[in-house]
Length: 232
Image (cartoon, rainbow, N blue to C red):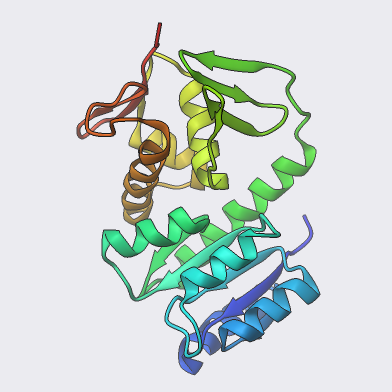
């Protein structure tokens, strides 16, 4: 498996050096940027495989960078930020981030998440497109086209929201545990994964359900997991 090219966007020199030293020790290729404008320029010029992105940059907010990159690319973006509130995670993930690590973090966890992302990239490259279309009430998922809609309205989902929706749709009526979902999405069940899963479910429901407080499609089983309901 070829090592991906990582763009490290971090203005804090010690943190940036920690990340790049770790990447170098494991033979990863990397680029660095300490401002948002430089990050966008590097991303558009070098087309990295993965971006590690700090949110608190001197010239612009990291969420704005995510939105700008998402306007032309679906490359994986892993946020690494000191912002630990759910509202911050929701904003970043809803903008299109694929993962969210809270500082301080361990380099072992960072590398584990990078390996999962790399495996996901390889899987997507080798996956044969499915020709099937899933319907459940007004919900329609075209697996081959990689899109979903409610009635005539297309759902604008992030890559991770779409993957989560597909997992639920492929197991209608079954309760999928937190561990099962996090293993399928990130390949691990770190504490951060469970928190991120909760955030993804909140953003997915906001887009999927007309009344998120009275869900029609996705039911929460507190302390266990989630289930997609069969809609007649």
